[in-house]
Length: 197
Image 1 (cartoon, rainbow, N blue to C red):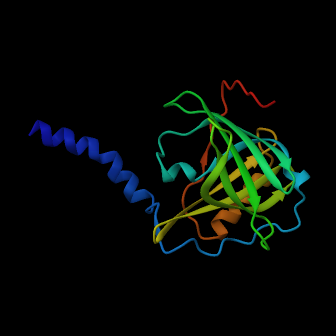
Image 2 (image 1 turned 90 degrees about the horizontal axis):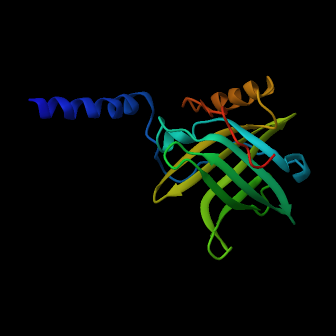
Image 3 (image 1 turned 120 degrees about the vertical axis):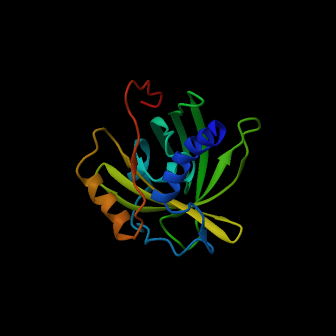
């Protein structure tokens, strides 16, 4: 009796999550993404950004969110290079280096490549990112990845400074307007030792 009670108690958070959030994998390949911003200049997005909120964590563990999430974007010809730093409650630190290569004949969209920290080469990361909107000091991105005959996707807002301007609320509304009802979870930015300032 005690064993089955403990099992049920361990299962409750999972069941609650399953009831609140739709499955992270959706049938079929990535849909046609929302219209990407085609007139953005790369100089508009280079520099440092702080992650404001996202539904990315719903794809993994909604109870564990990255903290102090910052990214530095630089140009490499027509591609973008990013250095991302964050604090993860499980690992305490995180570092990612990626390259974003423009999708041919599809402005505002980029294929992502992750840097191998051992030899410095980049390999496909399988996510395609769309820069949906840049508005003042905030921006909205959408990403999708095919996994077999299914796909998963997420949205994320970024800001140059925190607290984010009121414009960030308008970007979250775009997510809702695209019929994504998943919660946009805020990132934690307290007691941060930012490295990319």
